[in-house]
Structures are given as C-alpha cells and as structure tokens.
Length: 182
Image (tube, rainbow, N blue to C red; front, side, top):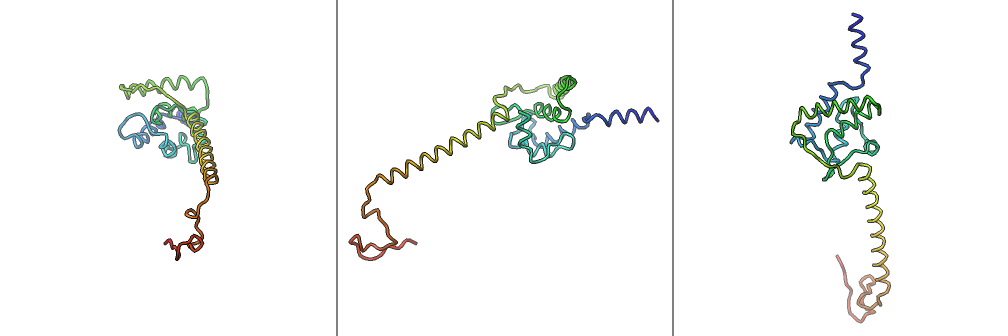
C-alpha cells in the first residue's frame, strides 16, 4: 500500500505526463484536420485556450506568445512541435532535463509521423509583432503626409465662383434659383 502511495505521489508531482501530450495532439487534430502539422498564427490563441491544464494558455494570451518567441514559416504558420516545446517549457521551466525531454518528444513525434515535413522558419512571433507595429507607424505617417499634401494643394488653388458653394444660393454668381442636394 505504501509503495503504491509513493508511486502515486511521484506521478502527481510531475506537472506533465503522457496523457497531457496525448490530449495536446487530440486538440491539435481539431485545429489541423488535414494533418499538415501546421496551424495559422491567427488560430494559436484559440488552440492554446482549448487545451486542458497544465498546457493551457488562457485568453488573453497574445503577450505570452510574444514571450515564447515561436518560430513561424511562410504563411504565418506554426509547427506542432515548436508549439509543444514552447508550452512544455512554459510549464516546466528551462532546465537541463527539459532538453532530454525535448529529444524524447521529437523521437516520439518522428515515430508517429515518419513523413515529417521539413520547414525553414523565416520569422518569430516577436519579430512578426515588431514588423506589424512598424508597418502601422509607417502607414499612419504616410496618411498624415497625404492629408497634409492634399490640404496644401487645396490651399494653393485659386478660388473661382464655380467652386464656391454657399448653401445653394447662386444669386451672387449670376445664376438664377437655388441648388438642392438630396
């Protein structure tokens, strides 16, 4: 009885177990029904929130993904193992034992998926967020510039009676009647 109790205690102290990884893959299948091994970055928030504890990253979770600095491939897609490694590191912390666990997880993944697609990450989540922020700043500055240029172009044009509207009364322009816009 004591031996069973000790085994149960040791198992409960492990924050992650085999069942957690199996559940991870079950949830993954819902977000990647064609088994491409990738999900869109836009689906990551919902995926992370759908996982059970301890791997779950509850919403709002965008900032936590930035801290994980996940590698992304073309099309803003994330690989299954990269997400699993990042979530595992979040739960267990960064330690020497984690590296051996990652190797073991990758071996199990390769056994289950012998046709693992090779991919080359082109950017990370942190870098992508920085690019989006920079693009927003540039777009805002360009819009201000265009507005300023159009306002100065309007100010430089000579005014003619044909361009002047004064609430529909055209008597000053020599035309008879009023103009109404509905």
